[in-house]
Image (cartoon, rainbow, N blue to C red; front, side):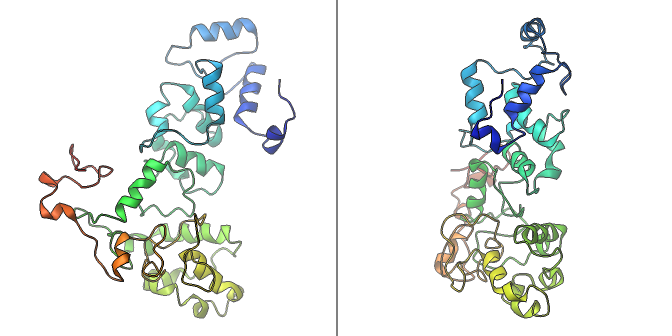
Length: 318
């Protein structure tokens, strides 16, 4: 039976409560009747069948998974795709969070990767690779939930210059005024999320200026926004976009909480002054420095990539 504990009071829609309700009533989203002892025994005897769900081997495993904040693997994968078909313990949470009870793969959830609520967090957690948590091109205003192993890919992008890509070279200490972001819906979604988190009126950010000027629009925001209702905090907006301490060129210590524009605008955001998270490592050598590509010297044969998080064909180097 559920008890009115402090933990339970914090959330009225926990997975624990859902599980209790499923066992208490005959109808549930999975088509199983667990309302009596006999029905539960019958279900447990069929748990190995393809359609059996909501089964966890042992109470210890159940408690572990229910309390788990972070998955232990330091690898980048889609948890739902990798384990969802093997045990419902890795499938039920994401199904409950999204309300999509027939969803078994991450390809059906990528439209939720950029959401700001708990649903977005869960999708990024269970579908990190599908959500593109491996690349700085993924500009959801929140990246919480992304597996650490996938975020390692972003740091690799900021360290080693990948010679086999046509997009932005995030390892170079250059402002990336790339059309893939500043001239796309990705920018609109980014600023919409930024406005929500900053309690700004929707549409207040000057999309046209960013689309035409790219990173150069950031320091001009106090002038561009001088006739808006938010002119009084335009300087704060600049600092938040770059993840800097107000009135300084110093980066905020620790995690900023939101996705900044540092990776796209390292020079404008001051990465050459304070090399912080999301800054290219090459900024140690100053603005417009180009990252070293060790593979060009022949270290990586046959088109292999230096960083093992970035595979080329069936081979990696490093």
